[in-house]
Length: 458
Ligand code: NAD
Image (cartoon, rainbow, N blue to C red):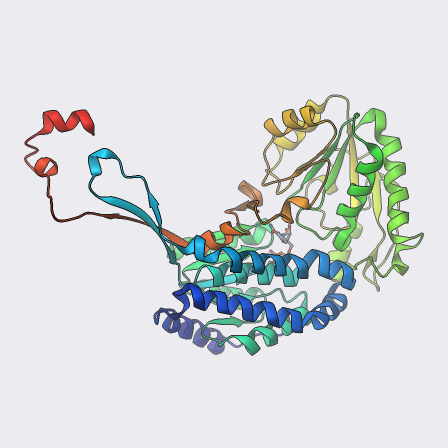
């Protein structure tokens, strides 16, 4: 594994602290310039990025563009367009008893940011965090996942070619590198990864009382009501579950289907899988592989309980697992206890939707939530459950709109980002009251001479 030596980690961190203190990263025009540099470099390196994603995950260039590169380019454009407005101090109302003072919020860059990201969308997640940090006026240390090594190396080279290391720098390694990094007093930590590591990050942040954002995972449910348009539901479920071979934080983790339509739905999903990936998905250039042997073996273990309805075969040497539907799943099966993060879709049924709601509410709050059916019923189900985000009659699209804050709740995350929320994630909303000196009303000063009247207006 590629690992940055400890002294280089510490030197980079110290140099960023010094550089941030020069205040150069704070001007809005500087930030916009850096965003433009980043955009240009992504365009220049697009083919290399696509090749790296193919090498690490067998992602097709089409999927790489649609789920990683285009999302990042749109995000950069949105920040370039809006940053001036977002960064402007905002005047807010001042209550009568505080007049003639005025009040405003100043958006102050937090400082040196630590960005830690996972391997599943290794380009998109790393660069989207960086966009927020640049937009917020911060310096950044980026730590990509060692499990997608080709793209991690390429990102190191790309960032080094456009930014000085004291401004933004990619450091390599896994747990050990993170352990050294987390001992430093960063000004903000932005972490994307599992809930398990999220707890380690939160503990480390607590040591220095460092602000942090945790973008975590979980089991995102997908309920299909008996009134759903089954053709559309089947196509959208197959697509959203199998993009990146199910290694998507907001993929539908499991299905909860009304019992009267289960057989019909599963037949249709199977047909859609074949339409998308052919009779043998292993031969399709659109079907990604599982990230490594450890993850592959974990997924093999989840195939042991229930009835295989579709797929179920795998090839460990090729890191391939066929798109798989498992029927007759019970709540206490292993597959219902952990985030699946692979192309396996367990199916449970219900007679009354409250059974699905009760199951969801018994478990940790998910990152996403999907309901296929009539809007009125979706509204009821949404009002009785909780999740970071979700879709009605669709899946995954909640991440594609930068006007929507993205993030989890409870076990699936803490804090949101994308668009303006990314800018806010890296800034301190500093509240300032400004008071003129031409008048100095005495009523607030001890010994509270006009207390009787003042009480009426305060
Ligand atoms: P992970 O938590 O194992 O790793 C994430 C990062 O933490 C990596 O950079 C890794 O090197 C580092 N890390 C691992 N163990 C560590 C430790 N003990 N101490 C310090 N750092 C450590 O996650 P992963 O396997 O890379 O990614 C999969 C998880 O990420 C899933 O749970 C998925 O749902 C979640 N995810 C969430 C989002 C989101 O936006 N909410 C996006 C993608 C993935």
